[in-house]
Image (cartoon, rainbow, N blue to C red; front, side):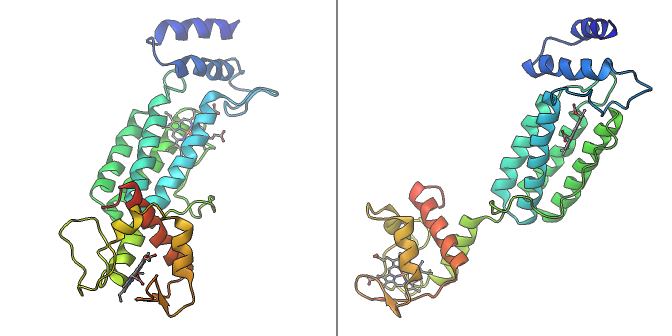
Length: 258
Ligand code: HEC
Ligand code: HEC
């Protein structure tokens, strides 16, 4: 009975809003129909479904972790992407309970993180990220979920994802080790330092015959000299360097790595 009244009250007080808000009613109801002294709100009734909000929060948790590693490793384009994801997640988080903290404060803290990303400033990023993390916990505590404590991540739980910027690493390596003979970037007026007659990287990357595997094999060769005319000394790269060069060539081919 109490539950029904709560539902009606919420429907009357909520502005017509996003679909998620409707979904959230379920959560709010579940929270409200619990006897408040007997059980803390973060214990869901036995057999209940995980709420839409908790699903959203788990997604937010992943984005929060990825944002950290991207920023710490100077992968600013990935950090920008994850910050956008977090922004979208926070904007779909409506007020978890009447009178509880809403997501606006967290969105403000995220704004500082985004500014740090834009100015490529790792120490500002670290500070703003901590403030955002504190705000995650602030909202949890304000809504009766004090036991859900978020911290700055220690290890990445994503062994299948590289958080460094492989294309940027490949570009830097290419400029340092290949730029003496090849034109590395796509700039029309660039000339290789030595005037050595080697094909431009953008030209190689746009060849119909180009493939990432072909390039890998070429660079993995144990021969002292490489190329159709054996005119290139083997640069003897480590595997991770080869992968970075391959990533850079693929980005050049796609036109996204000037
Ligand atoms: C607007 C308030 C609010 C903000 C801001 C917020 N949370 Fe939550 N969070 C909640 C509520 C409420 C729950 C409990 C949801 C439930 O179980 O229905 C929760 C639950 C969680 C959970 C537990 C989910 C589970 O099922 O295990 C995690 C993890 C989490 N939040 C992470 C975060 C992170 C990371 C941030 C900051 C980037 C954050 N939250 C910011 C309100 C918030
Ligand atoms: C000392 C000069 C020199 C350096 C340094 C050099 N290259 Fe080359 N590279 C050449 C020359 C010359 C050719 C043309 C080879 C031929 O036709 O035999 C070539 C050709 C290539 C080709 C095309 C091969 C083909 O199938 O046509 C690739 C790919 C390549 N280089 C990649 C690299 C990468 C990556 C680096 C840096 C890690 C690098 N090169 C460093 C001189 C150089």
